[in-house]
Image 1 (spheres, rainbow, N blue to C red):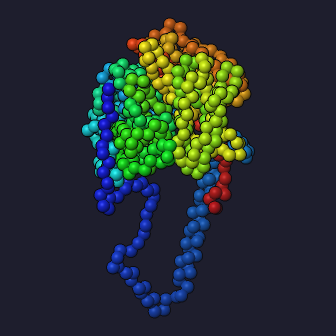
Image 2 (tube, helix red, strand yellow):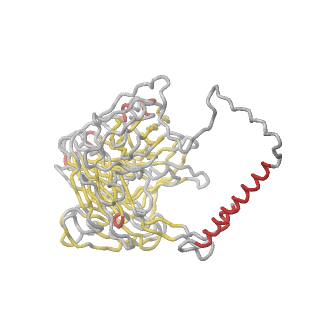
Image 3 (spheres, rainbow, N blue to C red):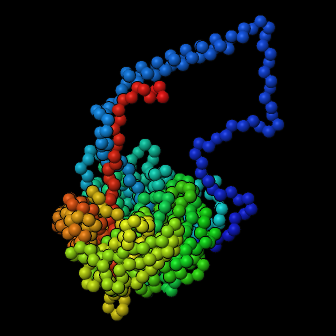
Length: 582
């Protein structure tokens, strides 16, 4: 099994400067030891009103310029002015989408697949391209950089043919072009047709940057799936690659027992990033200087083992990745010896209510992990969404979380042979504390073999959400209505090797959970994508379980579906000549 490498954190050198970013910060000053000369006396006979004449001329010149600007503003009004105040903004399709995938976790017997997909759109966008490119691999095994380390003066050179990363967070094509770089690992030809490719192999395998432009940008998504069959770390690990960002929450990590958990940081930007890892346990924040000021060089990937930061075994952890400068893609992988492994998905932002869809009917055990902020305790109701609506599981009605700490509870076989979603909400609506939550789910197979997956707080699918990697007879879709009854449209795309898309409408009762085998395209060849669209009713959260048993191990992974935000709001603009007078 591939072991994430790490560096021992050392104390910063005296006077070492922390990397900082500043925007437009300039100061004007006179050099030390220099003085301004005294003004020369006015020539004899010079008028004391000469300065006043110059002032009058300046004012007249300014008035002429202002009149010219006002005239241009009147002569060249906006192309499409708003007809009236208060008009709602219009929507437009996004023209560029990017995501970052972590370093593949493969081990000696593992294999990782990357699958990219863009759903067919209804907008006017045309052209464009989609591709995946490896981030530059580190020159040596990735490690925890020295505290206060300064980014290299010159970014490491990218492999030949690789375009330089852009501020949007992923490698880009040559300036002015929307085409894939020549060495792209994967290219997407058109919307509606998924493409799959093996990830790089070996201990130095880098993370991946993904980009889609033009007609391929709306709804573009990438899924990374790994299968490991060796004894330690066996299981299926999957995740939907996320955009680069500055804040990521993970709940459910551990450094106890046989757990080998690590954080993967991938920087596809053109500038270095400085990252803090904040670990919280049952006693609060785990203070460790080695977790602060980690420098991630441009185009590099790093894996940081949590045991090097937790100061001893901690059974339940919440991890907050905070990016002080720059942006990174962050992911957290958990491996529990022979009991299973998977990526812990990044949670939705802290909120008083968290909903976690995707509990299989054959859940053999479940463990809930919750973090509360340092400002206040959290008292929460625990509810399950079954086929007929919300109900409270006997013996696990509530959970109390102390401020700034992590609380955990074993839920056992909480689903009782029915699919479910789990909701945490304030016991008192007047005392709503934002929380982060995660749920470990285990499934047992023959001979005591098992696999594990982690669920997390999810946001509604909104207008549309997609997950890319699905296999024939192996995908199950979990749909939970968090409010009123709802209807969703589920579409299975063509396969990577061909097939005809299929569509199915699914009705979900208020507060209920429905699980359906994923509809499959006719004549399916290869992997396919699933797209969920809210047709009517209340908000819906969704998750996809991919289950492929291997050697009596019930291998599975669960990913929640999130709104693809394929459109953005464009505000109305109105002509206002008075702006030149303000």
